[in-house]
Amino acid sequence: MPSSLSISRHTRTGATMLLVAGALAVSACKTSAPQELPPEPGPATTTTTAPTQPLGPVAGSQADFVAKMMGADTIYFDTDKYDIDSMDQQALAKQAQWLMQYPNKRATIEGHADERGTREYNLALGERRANAAKNYLVSLGVDASRLGTISYGKERPVALGSNEQAWAQNRRAVTVTID
Image 1 (tube, rainbow, N blue to C red):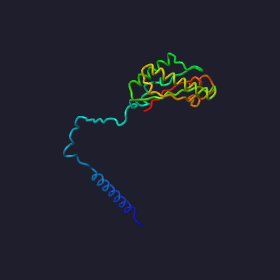
Image 2 (tube, rainbow, N blue to C red):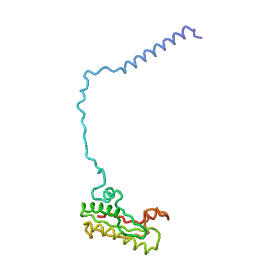
Image 3 (cartoon, helix red, strand yellow):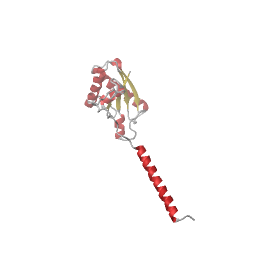
């Protein structure tokens, strides 16, 4: 059996070797200061590139028309009516101004009705509404050959429901630009 003196000698020798190995490892990783410092940074430079996408809708497009109209692309009517009131006149004047700015653009005016009444009656009422809007635009100087009309009657409601609120939203004429 080994003596306690020989065990402690082996332990001390092993510990010393570990200490020396650790010191060597640390000294091997030590970095020295560079002999020359990097140059001072110069003034900040920025490069700007033109955006690849337009910031808004393309001028003269349907999206541009809708954005500029801010809801004035649609006019509303009372029950069984197709007359142009003062609010409609303002909306149509805004439409005419846009159409005059883009003389090569054409538009279709869609006439709509609420769900009440027969299909035939509502198609005829939608047609009268679309024609009333068209005629007013023509009176403001828009060439009639640039404007078409179509009636959807009660076939394309924007509001579902059988109440006055839904019906009021569906009695309308909508101007849609086309190429």
